[in-house]
Length: 246
Image (cartoon, rainbow, N blue to C red):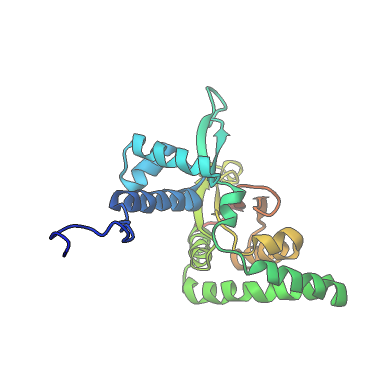
């Protein structure tokens, strides 16, 4: 006797359908993570402004990302150090490791062997070669730009294209006197380092990168923090005050 129309075989596998709402939540969560990656340390309110989300929605996603260990909170003092520190979000080191660096473990083993056989100079040559692509792309991009501020922005754009999640922030204020102008600076912030696993074991990569930045920008720069040494971002301080066209 045939089954009634519309009846389902009890032994047939149950069809599991994806929840569209869940997929949308995951997509939005990844967008939130990307904003924290590229602009962190960043407040929840600012994430909402960037993505056009309500404060409540942003906090739900940030709480979920925090529970997963992908982001963490950093307390930042106000401009004058007064009042309660504000909460800023950054991608955690565990979150960094989720961004696709598995192949680097093979490269790290190879570099360790190279260091044993040929010494640190050979490792540094590898690091120099790695950053040659950044230098080549920068020189193609820079054109006739002469302002140090614009050159710094161009370098950040190249780093962003190379996967370093780079952005530029201006700190301080340009003043009427040379003394006050020296406090005016740009900071290149790199929220992700595709070479972090290598640079942790081989600081030659950070050394080569720092020397490259100084050479391309033509000024003395300072590394304020790096991901391989425990920072939440790689931050490079570029003094703008003495650049006449900045």
